[in-house]
Image (cartoon, rainbow, N blue to C red; front, side, top):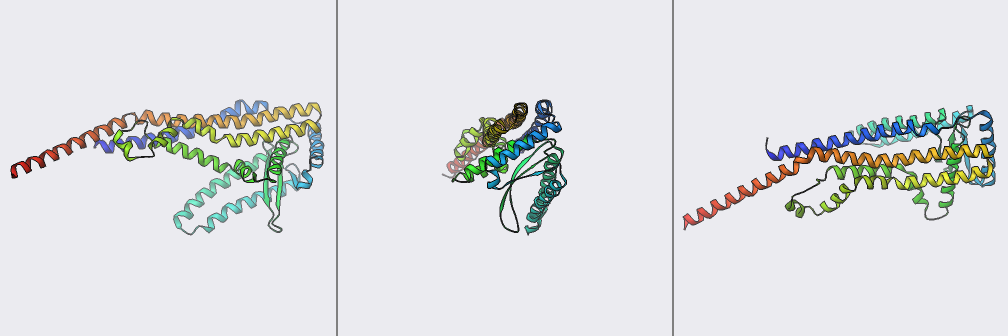
Length: 338
């Protein structure tokens, strides 16, 4: 096996190990931090507390203009709410499947089917959390019959009514930004696929960029300084990519906290404060763990590929030596010919 093959195999092993390190650290980091920190401050809602929340939410909808804006809350603890939420779930699943049917290329269709299964499983998991009272969500839905944009909040009002104030905060952000050109900024903040793509791009660039590179190779690759900068700061850049989402969620919690202060009794408002701290902590730890996971992936890759630059340098030196021998042979043959 020559030096070039060894070098390529070493880099491939390092990239694979780096990707594995990223997935493991990201998965287990989020799992255990959520279990041992976020769940510790999860509140238990009594029927009396739930009733106080419902009264305060109705006041907020009326007095803050959310009724006029068209915000509707569907309660997963009522039969009517369950039917509507299930209908919304089916609409989401149908939208995902429609992308598969539009694919014409067999390979593209196969990949879309695999991706659709993953997306549907993820959506179902999210909606099951709403039914169980572990989460709530604010969505913008287009009604097919009238093409009207509906602003909805899906929540279990018996088990998790505090989350509704956070979701009202999202709609408050949307309502204020919708009047300006910043509407597209709002859509960017809530669309997590842009954030995940940015993180993936940072991860891949850092994994496929060598820590040290031969000077001759640098001259032929004008993008190496950019890749080197991303690699040296991959953890920080990955964490920074999450900042827009963290900012949107934080502002939503602040808005929800203000509504709660206006309309909730003191006891329930203090409970709401703890709930918003839980919400903030979940997004803050996601930001921190994402940056740390990308950094660890890059570190594992560099440890494995530590000998790759040496192999590359040996290969370059050998090529130069062979080139010099070839030039010497030509010069000797020319001299003999004369």
